[in-house]
Length: 568
Image (cartoon, rainbow, N blue to C red):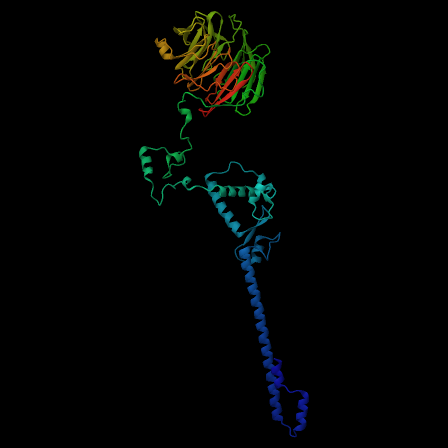
């Protein structure tokens, strides 16, 4: 620019020299030189202004390009050049970024910044949660989750939940959400478990049509499902063991913690019985204590213990309705314990009777009558409500054992004359009496839960199993005579489905046998070869057949799990 000006403007010294050399004034040439100089100055100023404008435009373009680069970097990598300041609203943050859709938002609950991708993922999770909520609402929400803080960097197994290497504390709700995400990642849903996955390309299998023709039953909630196997429609077992027959030969069982491990008896156990709910077990013995245990097979927690100072307990039994416990011994009286009121009542002696012992009794299945063995062949019938004597029955010989049948309308008895008596309690008369084959003195009686079978034992160790209807009809021979024991059999017990009969004798160690009723054979792996049962004195099966409890003379109640039965 200066070069252009220097070529047109004359310096002062050179002008003076020209004036001295030229004699005549050239006014016209001088005016022309002045105009040229002015024009040169104007051109130089315009070019200078134009270059300045070009420079400003270049700077402005550079700034815009830089802003565009920052905007793209923010879009791709998050907030690098304009971090959010605490106290600013979301609208202010949105204006600073450029007025476009929000690239991030402030999570007030977690006090952190979540990128737009996390927002989209959470938005999708919220949509899924809303769908699930429509189907199933949570019953209870923990308010403490929002307040709790979990350090996921401190525990090694929780470090996988971090999204950043420097992330430490997260809120409880975020922790729950990440755990669920991790679970879904490790346990992806299988295609065959989804409804409608059986049909491929919209064409169902031919088996579906066969299912409809055969009248297959669809589980609840799957009525509209198409193309699913019947096996996958319910959660029932393919083989229901409880409804199948028990096989002879070997019985599957396992030894559990003793039922009275928390409070063993100091004397022989004379009674064990499960409550109808299968969780409560009573034990009683000569130490004069009635104990209750909650049976779970692991700990068997003791619930309560009752001490009867003047009555060593010979027998204790629940009423079938589960409301009371009847306790007796070699005394003129007996006790009743109300489970609801936790109250013990003493009853006796009975009006008009002189019995000195009421140690043998049975309770009717309808819980209305208690039958005691009396003196000289008498059977005493006592009301379970009033505890008063309501009638008596008389045998020819001495009475030693009793058993109810036909839902409490009939009573079986046996004793010293070797006969089995059938009594009708509505008329209180004996309608049938017959000899128990091979029996001289009857020692125990037991009927099956459905009343079809009954078993009787004698002092010689022989056990006869009869069909009750055939026995009443005149058939005297038993279905099976069991001769596995050689001493007095004083305990007989059928299990809940009458597939097992337990027989025991307290006069000999390990004298306990389990009989498979359908085949009338003894299980060869019982009693356990490497375990000592001591002298067994009493036994009971749980209502579902899953547990078997056996009390012995050492004051212990052994507990076993029978694997064939799924319920206690």
